[in-house]
Image 1 (cartoon, each protein chain N blue to C red):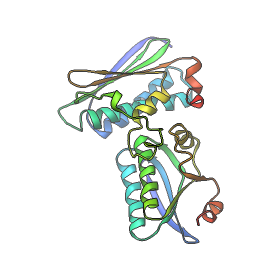
Image 2 (cartoon, helix red, strand yellow):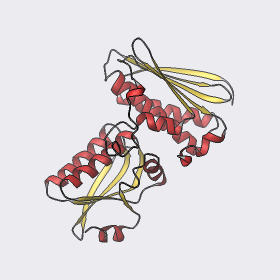
Image 3 (cartoon, each protein chain N blue to C red):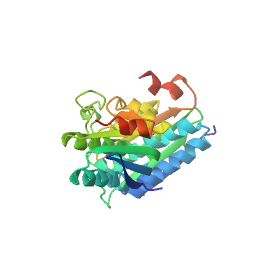
Length: 148
Length: 114
């Protein structure tokens, strides 16, 4: 894995969500992740991009989403930033508890955390920055969800 | 690849064959419309065949949950058929696998409706 970084500034649209997902898939494969982990990474990116476009920027054409990929050599670090009102992750309930299991929404952050080794959410003024890290190798990489 | 659906009847059970991606936007809206249309027409024994579904995101999972509760609230039953490994894993991670009645054989699935 060689160190490099690439960043995209995208419109607040569903096309941007698809583009972010497809780009994540390509970059993860190029970084050497296997097929299953490429899928997990691209799904996590899709969920973060949906949050940014839908819940953050609320499809506002004046607001942009930034998606940055950095290959550090030890990990793939992905940062997704929106310009919306900000997401308080402490107010996102656990979607796997019995009272939330049949709710239609609220699984995006849970899936991001299930698929990635680390997920950090930082409130900006305005906006939200989500940083997701997938280590090149490690005990959590392949069997994290199986242990839950 | 966007999602496609086709509907058929087997022994009084409505089987919806889905293919492609069930994701935010077109795919999840189509699934919602198909299930609501069936329920409106009084068809309340529904089997969703997900064998050719290549991808599903959290919005798609939400639509499956919504379809399940919509049919159940009308006194009906909705079951899932032929999960791919990707969809199976997603339902396990989200702990929804035990909520849905999941089958891998169409004839057995049809017979399982009350």
